[in-house]
Image 1 (cartoon, one colour):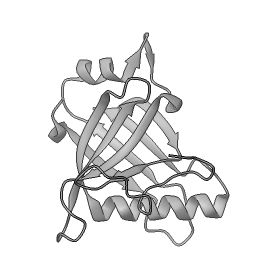
Image 2: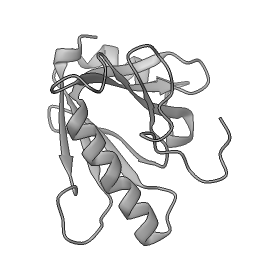
Image 3: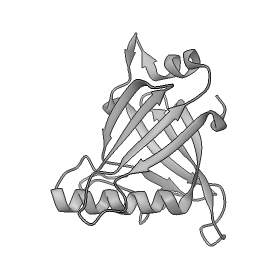
Length: 151
């Protein structure tokens, strides 16, 4: 699937009171390929079966760094989807998720909604989002890692 088939919108980031940020990923390509990646045994993957990561394409010191958001099947490691995203927006989103988690004492810090042409595919309430640099090294300070989780 091509990354340009996806559109990313973020809500709940620039608010006075901490609230759960919501990422809506809209797919505008052939739906059968996404649906087959998103299902296992005829059922849509649950939030316990997916991982979310953000990989930078260039060093953070670069002006306007970009990266790739990936949703992967936790058991197989296969990518369900990947889409391009601007790093500043992702880090702003991560900070909002941190604030929400601290304010609400809630492990589910953010929500991902997947849709296609107005049809809802899945909703995931997530607590972790791993951030990697352009060389594939984990950036712990930039990542959302729930307390008590060892990597």
